[in-house]
Length: 638
Ligand SMILES: Cc1cc2nc3c(=O)[nH]c(=O)nc-3n(C[C@H](O)[C@H](O)[C@H](O)COP(=O)(O)OP(=O)(O)OC[C@H]3O[C@@H](n4cnc5c(N)ncnc54)[C@H](O)[C@@H]3O)c2cc1C
Image (spheres, rainbow, N blue to C red):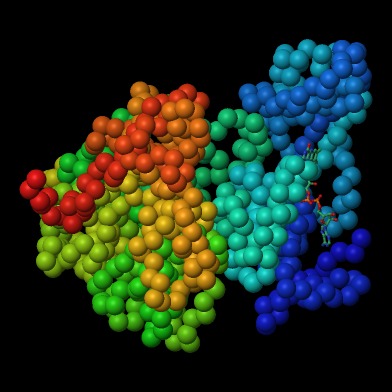
């Protein structure tokens, strides 16, 4: 064994890997050091949120019934009992994920550790074993031949920490891999694709190490790992929020939101309001839960009057300097706003021509732009922003932590804001997709007139120190108009009604812009990041097309991932996101349907909870397809 003792990045971006037997010059360093992933990462100054635990299984003596069988038994994982068993020789192998777990090597994996086993401690897994014996009595009577107690290394969500480290060039992690025998072949292939071709063929965000930022520290990692370990086989419900390790990132209004009844979810570490009705706890399930009505009240309130949505979790960036416009144009596929006070929506194109992100870019001054994008993808997007060098006098900075924000939306949002600002918010003075620095309740904000709800509204971004004062003023002024706080679950419903896609669900590197309805935002006459890749796929026929569905369902809505079939049972695609549309009284979904198999007006079937549900393909989103509401224009007379 010749350990790596150092990894040093060179000025040209390549690496020198130091070993006792000499140095290796390389373009890529791949950290696949398993239990030593943290120590090897530290050689390059990287901290990985990983924590090893002990894990035990035992193998029984020969079991006569198994010895007498002419077939092998299947592997079994008991989702309530937290044990697994499979045939091993003529006996059984039984392992457990116990509540009373033991962390191992909290301060680092010893260099000399040689995969020795730890002392058995079967008492610790007794509870799980009793459940196994209850289900399979022979486990209790067969003698134990040998016990294995060894270490495994976990990430906070038990998935791999995979991919290039966004802040470095040429450093790839394959870390935190728990079922290594079963996953490593596939991960090896995807790692090769990523390093050689620049991007994997699958959307790997769920395993991308960029899903964790600096906020995922030691205490958070330990708490999440303990929770994951003890619930290894538990059925996790859609949208389920787990408490372990929280809160880890809060804003000044957190306590105030709690007083308002906020029930929080975790969003890239932030505590983020899901809905405001603490009397109705956040139960998780596949069917509509009691909070379904609470969310409905918020959605209806926003469409009927106005709502105040905390959008502090969005990622915000400031690009300033004489090269700002050129740099942004070199990154994004749309033309950047040419005049001050204008905003644009733009896709970011991936290495294979798919959608790597969608952003709002606002020109606040001749040489100052603000960019707003997905909060959970902030670190993921660093890889793209680092791909184009900045001019000497141009700066790029993340404002995500320093700036907090609210979206004030709904037909009365202008009236509400007029109580707090002297700025002219009329259509003439402040049109849709315009932006300006204004003062609201005496607080300096960047106001951007955009909409993710389909309603008239403004995003207001202010210094984090002003967040409480701004929130207080908005809520107070809102009382007169019956406006109130609105959480992210209502926002999800409203944007599905309006047919707006969301990154990570409806937009991903796996989808091409012309499959997602974003092709119109790409400007072929200019250069942008990964344009070559986009040119390759631009004229290829769409494989799947983003479509809108109305589903007949009583008590469970599509949430994402449900398969869609033609009436004769032929697979037709899958739901990318879904929600009940409270203000239109319909269960809705955004789905990708195979091109040519189903179009507007066609009947399809969506498998919700494994059962077919009749659905219809719509020719446009159900809510205000022409955008009269967000532009605050009267519809033309019919
Ligand atoms: C009790 C138990 C049961 C398990 N059961 C299963 C199972 O049924 N199915 C399954 O899929 N998985 C199972 N696993 C998990 C599986 O063993 C691991 O996921 C897998 O070994 C991880 O592979 P890896 O290559 O990522 O890391 P490792 O196998 O740990 O390899 C890391 C390598 O990096 C080397 N290294 C470390 N530091 C340095 C350095 N500085 N320089 C150079 N080299 C270095 C090490 O020597 C080692 O060879 C089990 C694990 C345990 C403990």
